Image 1 (tube, helix red, strand yellow):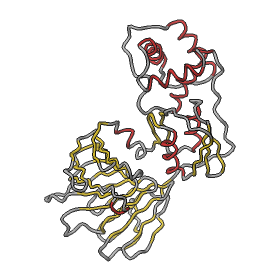
Image 2 (tube, helix red, strand yellow):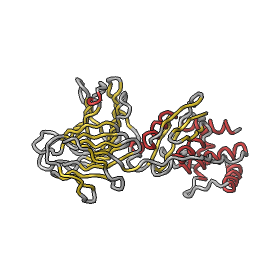
Image 3 (spheres, one colour):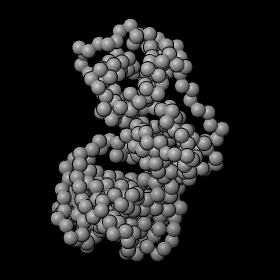
Length: 368
């Protein structure tokens, strides 16, 4: 079996298309040699290759998944390299060397006040809190006093993220290229309504002594026709509206009702994700850890095409993406800290040998 055949075997496994014998070969490798500390040195790879040759096949042990749904860069590289080396005695893959690199995003946002003033929020701070007529950073340092009733807007650029605590105590984490419009106060209102564009993770605070629903409206402010509302009383959920043709709401805790114009709303249970596309609302069970990886400081993707991966990177690293030649139809899975430079993600993708990259300033060229 040559390098290309070994690589295709790994892809087939992730897609669930392996034969019983192929699964046994790979699963037993992983069962016996998945180590807590990953060592991808040529010496260790050679050692593992000899051990696999001596001991496989073993078919009577309990099988495990070849790798978790969200895997580390090192684990993927070790598995890919060691498997190729075993099958074809090939030289270990050498990580690409980039003469340029791009730093990750950071805490940055603009706060637009009721009177139209814009405040460039401190990047050394992680978030802001709205309490009464006072706007302050989470460490208590006052930013401004807002005496007027009305709506404020928190906006993150590409390569930015920010955290806000709303007047009712609800916590919201905004991902890159997103905005949240909310009232200075919920006092005297029948509902707590906010408007989201982009992506955000919500931890909604329950209102003591009263049932005041929390509603997140999306789509309508953009005039896209994909208007959706998510209604909750107290819960944890994520909403992704980056692709206006496919709005995603993921529930982690509690319950929510997702509604679209002129349709009966759907209730979600923890682990559900609703997808609103082509004026249709559907629900599916998903891996919630993958959906909120960004909030937990990870760039993560599973069985994603290269365009989806690069769209994700474009938001966090504030880059422009170009494609050269025919796009690969390979699917990619991996996880890298969002604090890493972009080269860490690109090396992960290049380890598959399905795709290559060139960095020129803030522009990334994707090549076969």
